Length: 514
Image (cartoon, helix red, strand yellow):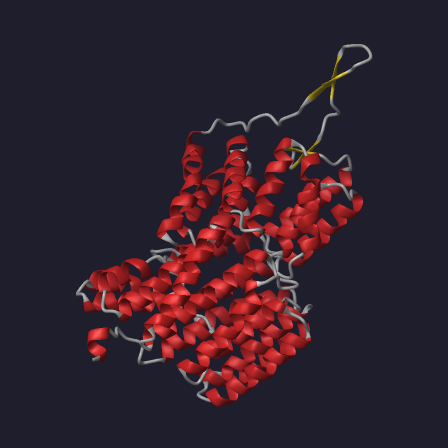
């Protein structure tokens, strides 16, 4: 995570630390009183409904409250489609329920965004209860990249409900998405002490233990096995274990648990896709293609369908048929445009750029993505569009630095610096520092390059370069730790393909180029 932007995120940490000293009861909900003008006697406002028995909400509809609770439960269990359906029904029961719309947009952001629900949540927020406003502001600010309001609202929620498992879980999950695995993990472990049988936390810890700065596959697997015990009828626990086992290099175990998930739900898309992903890494390319075809058959939206087709196209690269892979990606990119699926358009075009035949072709493809992402993209949230643009600029800096095009790299870095300052987005800041690291590396400044690259421990290429610098400077212990982190990032992506197949990825300095 970016060192500069870590300071912004650190605004929340005093609250996290204060959780340990919190009293056993959450604060009482804020309920305002009104006075009767006729009689001059105090009159209490109607007792509000309570979300999860604790947080006052503005709706007068018991059904809208219940459906919103159910939507949050589904979201926490990674049943995103179900969460969207329940939240949509909540807004139908009460069209003026701000939190219902906020939860709808919050869940939808993980798939096809819902800008209408986001705007409606914002518009209705002044009518909500004070505590409901905190939740709405937090959920909407995250989507709009307004980091400081999001953190302020999060802090207030944590102060008011320090032992509410839903508030704690949603907070820790957000920290996880910001790649702050250390603090997210600590918070989830604290939550697990309060709620030992809370399945969503066990799921998130399974991933956190494998993706942290000190990967612990034993803890990761143990957490997910406990998750399976608590949710034996759900496919997601088996799916999560299948994915984590692949990260850990246990491909056979990965296949077995994906298959178990599909026994529970034969249409569970991510497990069907996961079989193809694992088989690709195992080198069983024909079998992988068959599984991707099955994933396409059970996909329920254009984004999933095109993602499965993209993964299938990448198989060409893994089996050494790069020219055919490039043709497949070019054709698929046109189809994504025709289907008006923005997330698939970015995924496919970005992969096509990274896997281009030469660096000039890659830079041309990356530069063509910039103007598209700099303006509103129909169907893509502002936060996701910003993250995508930051990835493009970061890759421009990497490939330009690597090929001695320092001016081109600096242009991308300057854009990233301006974007990071404007947005305050943590992931944009991380891309900025990583890009600087690549340029410093190409200029022979190994010490500062390592410092900048260490900001991004979730990019295989950045982690790989950091390890090579540490080896070159004689810090073999640090290099060994960094390579351990790299080991557990194993996935059938374009970036992992480059990191694992391009033998020319090594420390190249300006002095060595002469």
